[in-house]
Length: 307
Image (cartoon, rainbow, N blue to C red):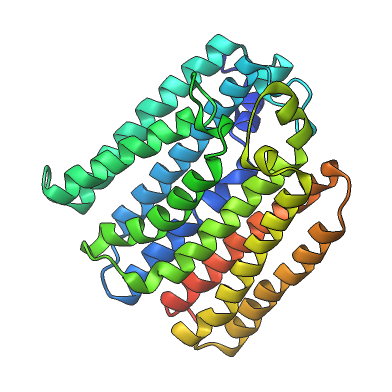
């Protein structure tokens, strides 16, 4: 594998940095709630962040490889991919997937050693969850039954970016399942699905033409847009109700929180009036940033950092 010169920039681009803030949103919420309950451990927090990032980069490499091999990226509307454009060969990207799988496995093991007694029931359960996360990261587009090609991507994103990320990361600190976090876990999960759906709506026509049956392809353009609007509406309602569950102590923090919540209405309107699929790409960063800012603001509140 060539790692010199411009190749480093190509690999960094293939890691898709703009996806990384969303991937750590759930970790921030789960970890800060452990601080709220006086159970925070910085080593666990740092290792959880690195592990999650390794999963996300692995998923991005595998997605680049899987779609590149299947030809799904040949006529895509969004940013060019490394394998599709020939900047990284199939064999080198496959090596990248193997290397990231190894790194993710090591980080997962280290995280569990820091969090639980080795080979306890919790250790074994989370070891299986970690293995499933690595498997899911690869199988989204790789292999004969790539679940992203059968409309299952939304479900896995909701589970891993929302429920597992928030509730699971919090469990690492004190081995307690905090049901109080279900609401923010659903918000992060639904917004993450919204980001994926925007991507799929943008590529709906090209995905359908090459046999990549995302949920957006199954639904069709009109129903996929309605589905997205429902996702945004659910997120907005849950965000508005959130302060009634957890009091926001800082007045300035409360203002920022409600501004971030109500920006979803603007996003709702933007998507509603959009006609050209290519324009959906403009909204990806906004929705991803909205979810990330939500997690940051919630984390500030849980961490008792008043701004």
